[in-house]
Image (cartoon, rainbow, N blue to C red; front, side):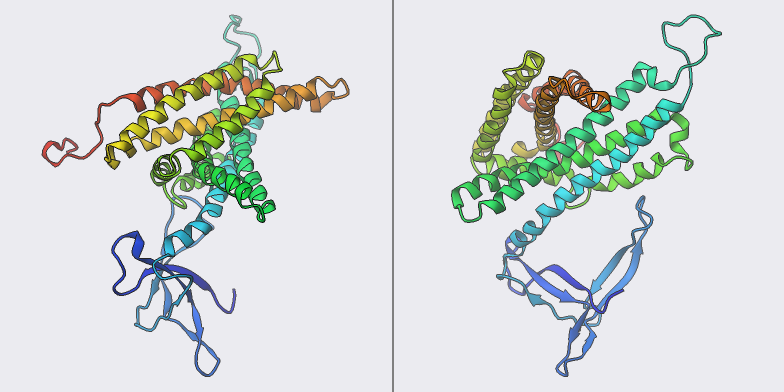
Amino acid sequence: MTDNIVHLVLARIDGAPKGTKGISLFIVPKKRINPEGVLQPNDVDSIGIYHKMGQKATPAMHLEFGGKNDCVGYLLGEINRGLPQMFLMMNGARLGVGMGGIHIASAAYYASLQYAQERPQGRRLNEKQALVEPVCIIQHPDVRRMLFLQKAIVEGGLSLILQCYQYLDLEKVHADQPEIKQHYTQLLELLTPVAKTYGAEMGFIAVNQGLQVLGGYGYTEDFPLEQLARDVRIMSLYEGTTGIQAQALLGRQVVGNQGKSLVKWFEEVAKTVHEAEHSATLSTYWNDLMAAMRNFQEVTNQQFKNAAHGDMEVLLADANLYMEAFGTLNVAWQWLQHGIAAEKALNNAEIQGEDRVFYQSKIETLRFFFHYELPRVQGLFHRLMDTTRLTIFDADAEVLI
């Protein structure tokens, strides 16, 4: 396909410190230039193909570096600074992976929506007449719940990822203004693992809801849902598993910088809430969001108390639950922004037809998210405030047998 392939490889120099502080970053080309100026093999070989659950058209190779002891790598940046350099690339990739989860979930939503609009099956639950024609399944409440959930995840998750990209743009725009740039950098670093995780984890849930809408047909190759379910599964593993993202959020971005980034995030959400305060239609929802955020602040304060004892296992044992709650709050914030924009549009009498239905759909999906999804954080908050430790390993009391 190309004359050469250049790999960026994390490796350890002889005598480097143990742990992540001893990792350096290297440029390792498949071919290197010899003293005569000619490209020669650099002892980088593919020694196998990974057979994956999904993404069948994307080969994943098992590479070997230096199998013949003739591989040369060129140091990139400072010695033992490889991990921070990698994260510069990783953060961009994380947003891409979160977007991957969302775009696959979007395809699943529209496939299952079309199926629900076309598939007649059963009658309305209050209909007692056996001779009445069956209705399309989009009229059944449980199917509508699954479709609403997919739409809420897809459009809310996409909005959160675009929020991150907006911060990335603002960071670049203010490159010559260090304080302002740092403001957006901190927000971006706080929300990047959240956007990645929400897109990946909730994208998977959304696709499976789409498959469920089709029933048994969803499990066949006659429809695209089974492929989408396989393909989306990798997203929560790419660029750091969900557990790693959650530890980065709570350990590094919240506790690690004394909550400074979180304060900036609260200020951002407060701007949206202040704008929503002028709306009678959105009154219930901004109040619900503020109540959840107050509870989240209590939970976060508890995490700082855990951190003060210096026991990282206690602090990070339920980091995944903290991530899940924070992700839900972020998407609730995004839906409130959608609601503000939709209400403004609906107040414009010139907006009619499909455009009007579009904005009405935004309001109804916002209502769904706040009535069905946001309440879930209370259970997460309850567990995060619970001091009972069940998952920390104890060699003397091991029960997983």
